[in-house]
Amino acid sequence: MVFENKNLTPRERYELIGKLIEEIKLRKYSYRTGKAYIHIVKNFLRSELTPREFLLNYYSDKSKSTIRQAYFALKFFYNYVLHEKFNEEIPLAKKKEKLPVVLSRDEVKRMIYSTQNIKHRLVLMFLYYAGMRLNEVRNIRWEDVDFEREIIHIKVTKGDKERVVFLHPNLKNTLEIYGKNNRGYIFISQRGGKYSSKSIQLIVKNAAYRAKINKNVTPHTLRHSFATHLLEGGADIRYIQQLLGHKHLKTTQIYTHVANKDIKELSKLL
Image 1 (cartoon, one colour):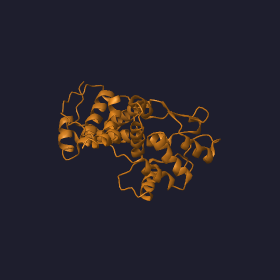
Image 2 (cartoon, helix red, strand yellow):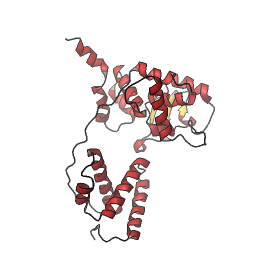
Image 3 (cartoon, one colour):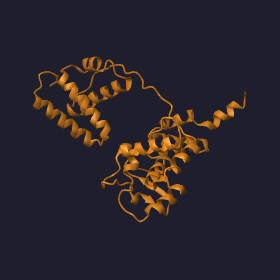
Image 4 (cartoon, one colour):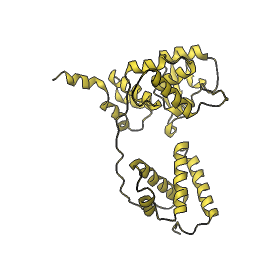
């Protein structure tokens, strides 16, 4: 029986959203993506429109990325909750590839060493010296850091793809000062739980302000800087791909567009 988005009772909508939540959890989608998908599907079910009508009417004035997210939310709902083929062939504009914001080495150092709170300094160091994502830093545990072998085993990752990165000497020294023999999560809030995403974002924002950096600096900016500085230093791009945990080399190759090494050489030709 083909699903029709019409005359659904509140209970039927509630049950469908319940199944959607289950499928999102089973596939371990991030909290952020799951929340967005649930919001979109709720609006879709209330609208009583076809997928095409919903996307054209409900998202007509939204950005390309928002429309893409709505499209994939509906596709997920049809495929995994309704177990129906999503036949809409709505042309989606390609996502505009923006070049990442990258800091200089001096800017990164100013951010780190102008931060007096050692725990906050460690947050910045994990983001930069290990190239970790915000959520990976939130979930890093003392047991994941091997001081003897000088490696970090990142277990909570995007797409559940565990990886191992080097333990940079600067990060290692600061960790040893902070409390090498501890167990559990490294970053614990005053309330006793893990650091929130907002806390880490605020740490980065405040550090950039103290360092007098005018660029739009986010936690991911430090990861971008990690990759770009390695590339500028001569590291093989495939090693950088492994350190970042990218599935496809193409994702890592964006850093070739912002690496300064070859660009500076070209300026000498003029």
